[in-house]
Length: 145
Image (tube, rainbow, N blue to C red; front, side):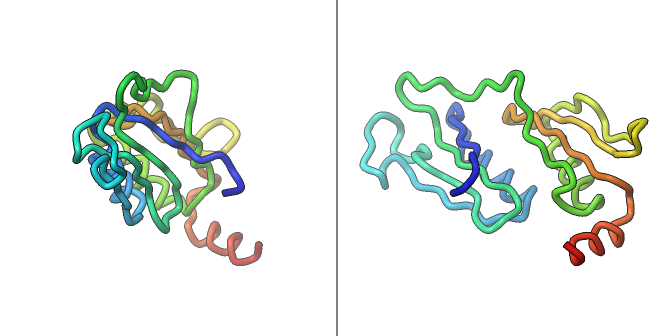
């Protein structure tokens, strides 16, 4: 890895969360249980290590064990600004909103860009946005770059 990667500890919901994120972002999910890793500090079927595979977003997660605190996200946002076409980003915003809380709906800002914020059902705070609203324009820029 050449960049920081999100690794979260969840309160027994890592498998469910990774499955959700895999579905939202179109990724495969790899999960390894405590039992597989020979760990006895939690339920045998708890997630010792899991991650998204072959997708636009990288997330690692595990179920918190022992005295590990579960995720509590304050003062941090995961930014997906211009990372895909506007229609894909709108879809991600919508899906991440399911069971979560929209902090600031997707909207055109005074400077012309569109963005919004959502805290998903697992507590991650996302900032999603894009320039313009024409998928063809974005695809041309990607092919030119």
